[in-house]
Length: 316
Image 1: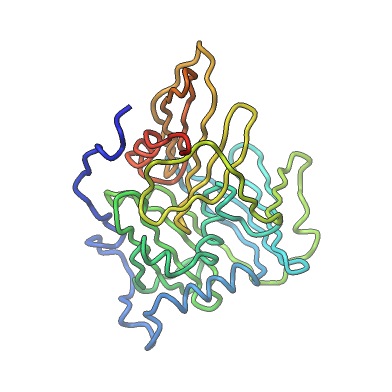
Image 2 (image 1 turned 30 degrees about the vertical axis):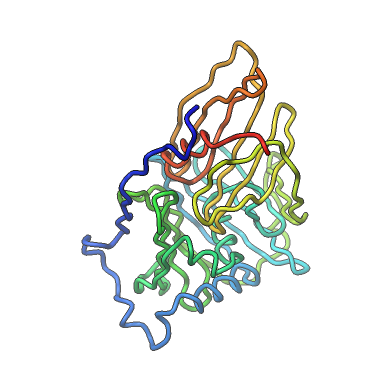
């Protein structure tokens, strides 16, 4: 396998964000009240909304050519967030989570992304993304402020978030590919800011999946490491699996996971799969005569996933 340092870099191409040269109806940032064109106060407001606000509503989730409708109920109990998400279209699915989603769990997605953005070190994020206030737009019959996070390199996706002007709650988030294509859109169509009753946070089906995010992230050592990482990404966690290891990396906003698993002699996995903003790239590595499959999964460009898979090596 060729060393990653020998990989030839491609010309850097900044993504074209929605609304640029598109004639989209939005208000330029200059029309906002004085001082509101600074991103920092809006990110602070987002943090308070994510951690303190109770709400419920209907959400549309567009990804991989599909449109799904979700019911979201979000409450705060004993200082901890409790959220119930029920899919109203397609297969019956329901999720009930406790606590704040964390990057070390390696679970990307529009619901988790808002929590990551509110909790991330802003100085660290500024090194990976260029933030700006794009203007105003109406979402779910509420005034919102549009924030753009434009990647500074070609190894992560762009993000556009619409924050409720009154509360700071993210009412829409979009992941943007290198060519300016919207890969994923998560958007409220109805929002109720009334206090949430205890019964509304209880699962409505026996098959509901429960997620506990309250335990702290515990670092675990692994024999595997990456010989190369895009600027800004750091190792967040490692976990031992029955047939290998799982490693989680994040730049504070984007998250990807690397699985290294032992292969049987009859298995030969290679290639990639892309679904919406999520890519899974599989490769192989041989160490001490043993074959392992390397799988990189995350909301990152597929070219980056390929480079990361080829960068897997043992510690030393």
